Image (tube, rainbow, N blue to C red; front, side, top):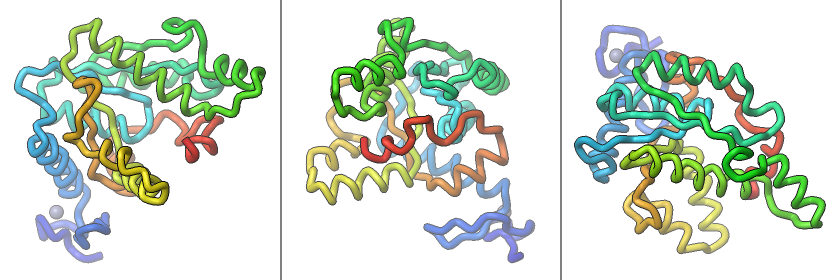
Length: 238
Ligand SMILES: [Zn+2]
């Protein structure tokens, strides 16, 4: 294996496709942390002293976000929120314990909220009711809207200034391509970090590709959730 292009001391273990760089594990992690910091600064996503609530699903993207933010920002100003959607086999009790353990290792408290407790119905309940009415609404629509509403609610009630959710470059690229194919200029515009927002309680973080997050994630944490829920196939259509 060639040597890492940064430190020129260790063997490279990661090939970074978009830069053509081959990097040693530690240099690769530093590179991602530096890029996330740069993007946050560039778009003014966080102001000094902000309390930030991180959406933590238990998937790799959200763990990487938690990990990075706890390194570049005061962990006492961070909190995590995990939404129990009520999708069978998706939010398991052992996942919640692992999420709490991972967060507490980084000095971050986790708030757990359940859609059933908050809105009176889980995603499974909503999907069942929708099918019974003959509607063809994607489960991800119910899930996405209620998750976002619930996280906003918790942030406001607990006095957080910002919400951070993880987006990786693959997801962002997929959204852009779908919106180009649909000719949906408004949605394309809404993807920009500095777009006008209905709520200021939202921080998008992206700029890293799926493969990189997998590598970084497996280097630092265990991923707790399956990549997709039982509604995974319809997620692509939402
Ligand atoms: Zn290196």
